Image (tube, rainbow, N blue to C red; front, side, top):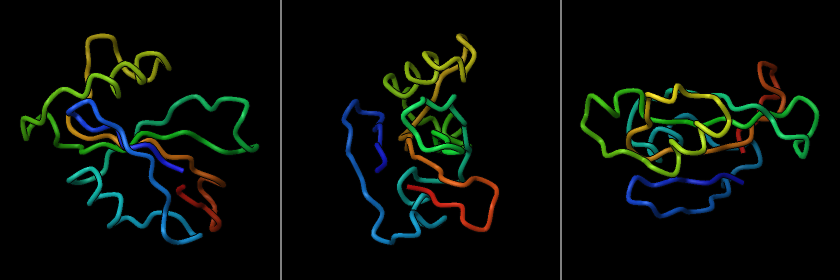
Length: 107
């Protein structure tokens, strides 16, 4: 399960169509650009080795995308982003299982 934090303040819960998870092209379409990955500290509720990750448009600020208040607050709460920085545009939070292996899955 993934959560799309839209810059307009709305949210959507998404499930990948494939058991293998989201593809690169699907992730890029959801956030509207090239991917930047912002890892978050993993809560104990995730399976061992699982990670929470935010995907955002790496050029969101250059494209003058609006401030994403909810995603920025989430990143600040996890100390994953400087207090003077912000996230722009739509942001997708996903769970990554088995990162860095052949079995890596983005859910």
